[in-house]
Image (cartoon, rainbow, N blue to C red; front, side):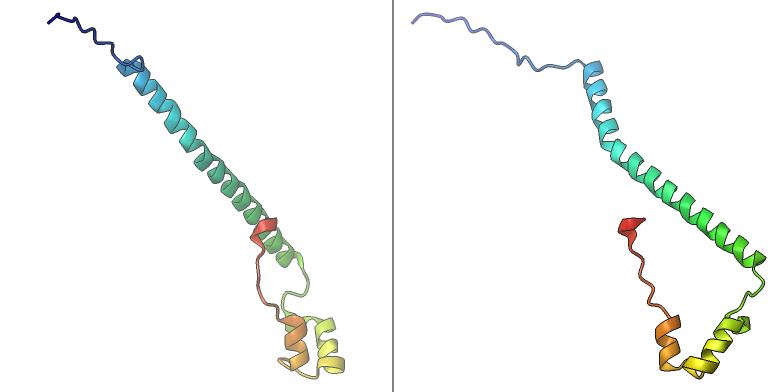
Length: 105
């Protein structure tokens, strides 16, 4: 029998510890980017909602009639058309079903 010499070649995909940590950091950063984008989108929406609320409160403070039963137009509508509060017509006209379409926000 003839003696054969074996040569062992390591896999060419060897990374040093520094390269491994660098690549791992890059992958983690890429995975974290969508979370940052989502967080910033939510923050922008919250800023819009806060500005809207402040505007509504400002309008409410500046308005002369702050309650619906003090509004002359509403009182006239009840007198001439809807007859009394909580009638079927007034319920249909004044009371809304609250549905928020979040796709348009």
